[in-house]
Image (cartoon, rainbow, N blue to C red):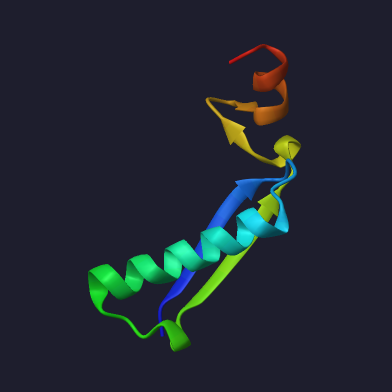
Length: 67
């Protein structure tokens, strides 16, 4: 049973976009590894930009600085 965990920043991904991510990740496992889509689990975690860091600073601060 494949398990895929997608982490994205919480910035308003729509339900339709999330559904597309789930569908696409599932299909990728079917196409590349011949996995059964009925037993493939995809979880999307949305993380606040204050809780996501890159290069020693939060995404919130990086966005404010235009990085």
